Amino acid sequence: MLDHLDLDISLDKETYDAKIEVLMQQLRSLQLACWEKKLPVIIVLEGWAAAGKGALVKQMVGYMDRGDLQSTRFGRPRQ
Image (cartoon, one colour):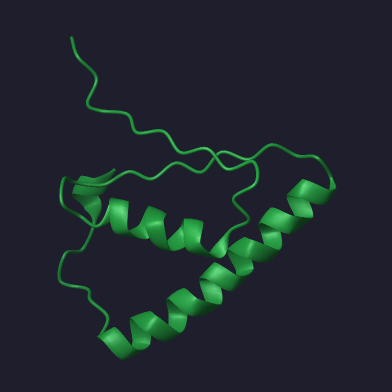
């Protein structure tokens, strides 16, 4: 799936900051709606090493209610 990405696409920092703020607020609202309905949620991130997944998780956690939040890291499957 990741091999089909257009790596030439980018956002300037100002645009990214504006978009991520809106998205994080939506994430918080969705979390509260799911919590009120007692719906479990799993969020999965996939990406290349050093792609910023860890920073994104920290940012997401900063916006979310941490009461029942659990974070787990999975490595590459071993054969």
